[in-house]
Amino acid sequence: MSVDAKLAQLLRLRVAQMNACSYCLILHTKAAHDQGIHSAKVAHLASWPESTMFSPAELVALAYCEGLTDYDLAGFPPLHQAMTDHFSDTEIAEIAAIVINMNLWTRLKLAQGATPVQET
Image 1 (tube, rainbow, N blue to C red):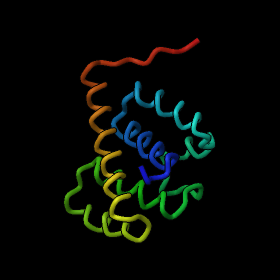
Image 2 (cartoon, rainbow, N blue to C red):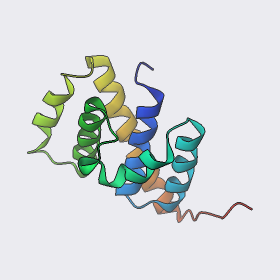
Image 3 (tube, helix red, strand yellow):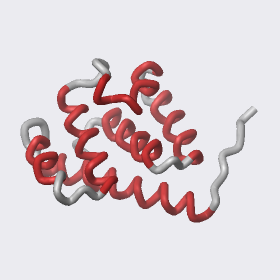
């Protein structure tokens, strides 16, 4: 995969937030921590448009992630076009796959009634 692992993890976590999947939120918050993403950045992810903690490429990728998750057909073309300023065609395809795959997993976990369990 050519997409930065930390960016991929932020995208997974953002999808989990948008789909309100508690199981995925716990899993991917821990994964973000394990990958060395600063806890303040994770905390600001829900308010990324107003945050100064994200690079221009991360901001574009997060907007693309939200557009793809919301399935905003009218608003999606400009989001895709903005991606071309920061990512190659291969990276855009990989980011799309990350977001689509995470949407699948969040919905599957929600359909299964997956409930997080507090680790002690």
